[in-house]
Image (cartoon, rainbow, N blue to C red; front, top):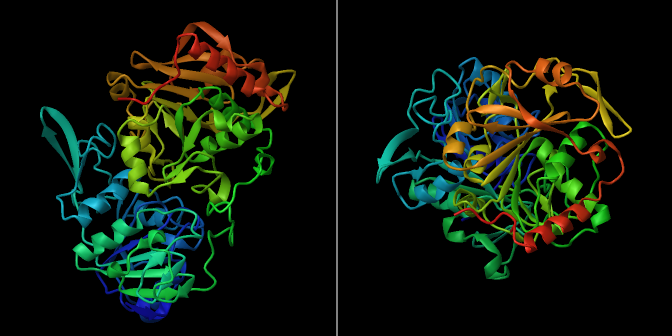
Length: 533
């Protein structure tokens, strides 16, 4: 192992290399100093060129950092990731076919690192079947020049599976907190663990180089052995950046690192608006003892609602980055969590998800078609990607999709327990056809999985291959505010109900009382949701 500067590490990248970068979202465990040095070298020397960039989770500050460091003409040839939205400058490169762009499920990319490390022939899974990941649809492609088949359909014992093929790794850039003189790396101040050891092992199996950025060095033999996340035998180079931040927005939070638990009243509350109404209604789908996932977008607000209502300890919230229990964060630091009971490496969290461990998953939606299929990946001028959406939605027993009914300029007002639409959104989200299928409602129904769509003005569910309106908000007009704002005519339940009036009052809803009532009902013979088999 050798200690080098970020600039020296950048010279290790050769034109045509396949480069993997660790981390998640807004700066969590991203080796930013190394990425900045690679970008500077390209500006100064015009090299390296024609790179393949691999990252499991979207990386960036939605401006110039993270994966955006590679978004320069000639520098990048191919992108393989689960999400592009954190590096928006990558999106037009995919749209204009300037790069070969693939967006594959986050769990797939996380888990395949272990298969690549072991020299196995890829990842075999049912995740992605009947979505745009399926080679019978798009095979995860986001640009015409993405010709190579990275996923293939196969059959085992009469059942369909997808095989995600391994890919080369010439150099990987990882991050930890402390390295000793032998290259052993700990992650005590990091907000996430990711799949660091699997990345390093996969690179070693492929004959690649492993570079780890850390904040500080320690003397040989002084790091607690059980705290080492990347053993020195896998590390070729260490880059020390004393200014390394925990995330782009946060220099260091001990609660993110699990060093302490913050008081419940210290957790941020959501402002009272349409997003909070939706998060509240979604939270009403929680049941005692349920194991849940909170996805990105509006769904991250459910943890804030649960904390405000005093029900955070009534269920176990998780997120795909590996946190179990506590409150997953919202906003720019989403992906991290506070007050969690455990943090596991990301591939193992997806093992749990894929194995049916989730009772209820809370996810967002961008577009929904008449059958209840969901698109969150590509719409209008955006290529977002899928993140962990497909792993989660395809394997949870029940999915609660949350989002505003329309988009672009929507404004609402609440008074006396009722909702009024003061400015309608410019874009419909319930549309006749969607560009990419990320959740296949028909396939889910065939497998006995449930779904419900929660908005600020209505609640819907798939039923017999069609969407059905089952609740509307007090104060809204069914025809004008709901049906006329859809691109198709859904079913309307014969027993159409009004949404709970408490949703439209800023005061706490007393959901703890509701939860206790659900617990009593379960005790009386109707148990809460259990882990899917």
